Each structure stands twice: as structure tokens, then as C-alpha cells.
Image (cartoon, rainbow, N blue to C red; front, side, top):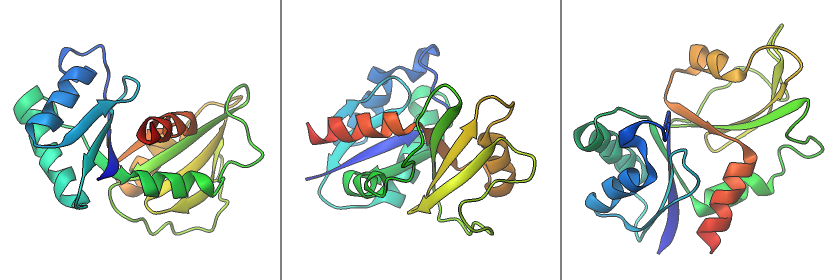
Amino acid sequence: MAKYVALIRGIAPAFPNMKNKDLCGVLEREGFAGVQSVLSSGNIIFEADKAEVKAWERQLETAWPKQLGFKATTVIKSEKELAKLMAAEPFAGVTHGGKSYLLVTFFKHRLKLGFELPHRPAGKPFRFVYYANGALFSVTDTTMPGDPGGWLERQYGKEMTSRTPQTVERILRKMAG
């Protein structure tokens, strides 16, 4: 069986219906196998024989409000896809912390960027450094106000969710374990 991760947008574990056990319960009730969570921010790993990613995304987006009372964009990536993205080393030479915040934004649909990479939108404290397979990698200068989230929503809509590269690596380690 192949491993996948459901990356769920807007999960806040402080809300009663957004706890890992509840999120995992939805996937189990929906028939997914090997369900387990990573951290408490909407990263749910599962196993499946046949890749039906778009159908699974729709299935889960329908299940969240019915079973837990909230709507949430869900992006599903395979272990193989995540490993390939991180193997490209899109953040080579840049560290997360202090003066720079690294982020991977996963989109439900492939983007037509409309710009060449690397790209820094005029007057913004962030730049985009890599794009592949529906994932856009950004670096934000934390010494200036602003982040890429709002800009990305205005450009491409809300069908996206973001994770730090450290979280993506944690997901990959748990998938491998």
C-alpha cells in the first residue's frame, strides 16, 4: 500500500472538533486504512492501494462539515510526491528562523504562476523560490511585516494550505516509520 497525507487547511486544535483523534476518526469512518496524525495541525497520514486523490479530497471536504461541523480545504499528497519535492532542496542555503521564515504552500490545483522564479512581488517581504507539483516554496524576511498567505489568496484563491519544511520533513519521517 502507498502512503498519503491529507493536509487540512485551518485546523486549530483548540477548537473542540479539530482534534487529531476526531480528524483521524473521520478518515477511518470514510474507509481509509493506517490512519495516523502528525503534530496537531491537520496532517493525517493514511494508506491506500489505488490513487484517487481528487476523489478523496472531495470525499473528505464533504465529510468535515457533516461529521465535525466545519469546512476545510484538503490537499492530498503521496509520500513519493513529498519526498521528490523536498529532494529538490528548494531552500538550499536558507535557514528557517531568526530572519527568515520558510513555507511550503500546497494548492489543490496546478498554478499558472505568471512570473519566473525566484520572484519577489513588489514591496513585499517574501519571495517565491521554487514551484513543482502544486507546491510553491517561499522565504519571508521576518524583519519586515507581511507574509505570503494573503497575497497568494488574492492571486490564486483559498484552495491551499501551508506547512513549514520542518513539518513536511516530520510527515515524511512518520510515513517512512
